[in-house]
Length: 391
Image 1 (cartoon, rainbow, N blue to C red):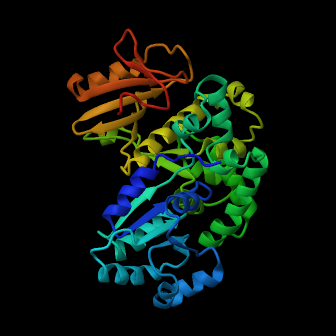
Image 2: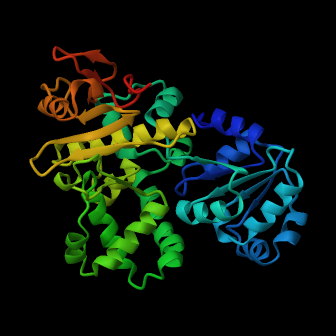
Image 3: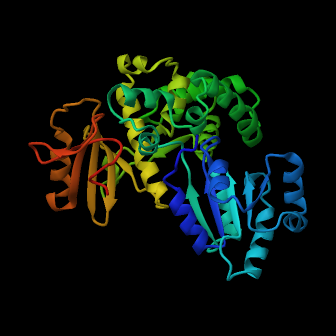
């Protein structure tokens, strides 16, 4: 079963404009499948195989002779020295586009190598697990009610849907593989049990302000250790740290980021939910819906090859809104409410007074009901799929 990805057309356009394309994303989001589906005539090599990774790292020129372009290089982060040889080939063929497609699961490490060697020569795209729009299109079902809870619980990893896999077994294997391969290699973690506990604790706090000291106290590790673990989760695109929005009033604002998981299925598994109905009964339902909403917003930007600019607002007087999206000198405000008929949102009036009416471009309440409408106060009430006000 092939599920059409929204990023596909953006990737094809990038290949016509640039010599190389880098596709980043967490493990199992479908990077390799997308590349092979879109580019059946490209040569393919995966550096997941240690022998090939070693050749690419230590004999880059020979490696590229053995694997000529057009070429897909999977998991390129395992051979960082290869980038200088890719640059050489690209510079010798500057008039050619679509020479290389690179994929990788360690975003920040890759960004460093790209900026050193391939700046101006490469398009950088991100592929996340399936969006609700993609699931609706593939299944013909609507992302609301019990179906929304089911997808929130299952998450968006394509293999779950294409192969109809057991959800708990998939995530159990995913976490074990991730711990063993990526974390152990990146951090030399000695006690994987502590890191596993940390991941479960982080999942239970999705949508909350990040506190390194609280994590450290609960896990029994130093704040610096927690910080390094968070950096690996972020680099692997498992979590997203949402920064606060502030202008000239910085002293009044909370400057701590908020922690979100990028796939609610993984968060639900790590938290201990065993079926969708458990979410609806849980005190975490609001935080998970907020997590889902942010993830869908990020996916919409990524599918167009655009960098998201999303923040939250919170000051020490308790004025808080879930998401702010700046557009020029104006602001779009978003508040998530897991309710089919949300009450008016007081914070919109507070932020309108704070920033000025002319600066508020739109204000929206995101709910689990499909569709968009204006309420009596003039705010949008819209769903977590289309974001009508944004597009």
